Length: 118
Image (tube, rainbow, N blue to C red; front, side, top):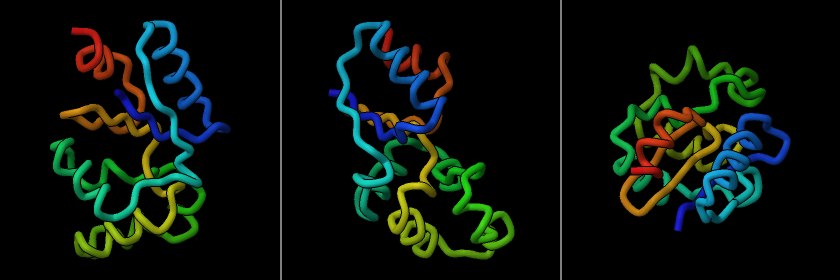
């Protein structure tokens, strides 16, 4: 089963969920604000993704800007970054798509097609 962490007021999340429904792909939706992944889960997703940790941050979100993370992240250690991501789901890039053996951040239709429609 595919899990998608979304925020219901996010237009990109709505577009991604519509895409999944249109393709007939079953998925479990979790509200990233209230059901965000904990630190251990984020570490597992990070390893599965093969992406840089920076890609897990919602760089266009209000909390990211309010905390001045564009300047602070480069100086932060990995443990500190994981703790920060786990503290507030609104800091996590969305939608966050989690499969059995992959994780994708954001909605890029070509990436989703490659992983979900072989």
